[in-house]
Structure formats: C-alpha cells, structure tokens
Image (cartoon, rainbow, N blue to C red):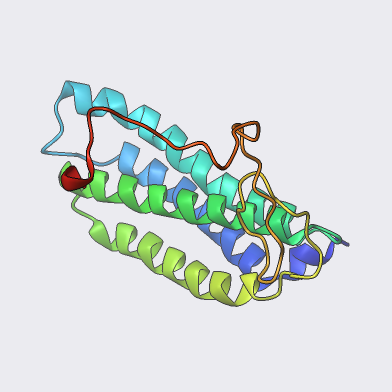
Length: 173
C-alpha cells in the first residue's frame, strides 16, 4: 500500500472531494434567488471547476508525497494545492452571493479546507530539503544556502560599458 494513503492530509483531501461532490448536488437541487439565467448557466462551469480543484488537491498531495520526490517539486505541488483550495473558497463565496440559503453546507467546506490548511503547514515541513534539484534559472524553492548562478542574456556586455539614456539625467532619479 502506498504510504501517502495513510497521510492525514491525503485523508482530509479525499473528504473534501466528497464534501464538494455532495455540495454540488445539493446546490443543483436548491433555489438561488439572486441568480439570473446567465448565472445559472455559469454554475455548471463552476461545478466542474470545484470538482476539478478538489481532485487536484488530492492529486498534488500524492505527487508531492511520493518517495524520492525532490524538495523543489514537492513545494511546487504545495503551491498548486494552496491555489486549488483558494479557488474552492472563491467559488463558495460566489455561490453564497447568488443567494444559496443553506450556508451551513458552505461553512462545512470552509471548515474542511481550514482543517486541510492546518495539516498542510505540518506536512510541508516533512519535505526533505536536502533532496532538491537546484533551480538556478528561476531560483524558486531552492533551499537556503544554495549558490545561485545568474544566467544573463547579456553576458556578452562588458561590465565597463555604461548604460546611456539621453532622456534621463541624474536629477530625474
């Protein structure tokens, strides 16, 4: 059995998938008094986005939790998890604005995402910082102490050359 299946954050992500699926079905059967025909048409797209975001959270947890996953790759997946969770919250707020009356169901999703966030903070601390691929081109998620090699497209410019711009003088700066 894969070790990530026992992670509390994975278990919580699977619970969020179930909550989102149930919420979508409940909203479909509910009246949205502030929604016009365009809003109702857009809702189906929102439902797809919500389910996609819920499933992506789980998927990125699995991807980041695999054995030998480099630190930078795990952190990149962590960012995707955070983004998907924020989008779920944004979609929930939109549904509430349309007049969804049973906001206790939305509160349940908010609570589940908050529980995921707490687990997330602890989970990312388990990422092995010593197992990384140096990202010298972007310097994103390089562990502290990594020497950065700046790749400059202007490597052929002599350092003694000065930048001149006739439109700007020292008094303008």
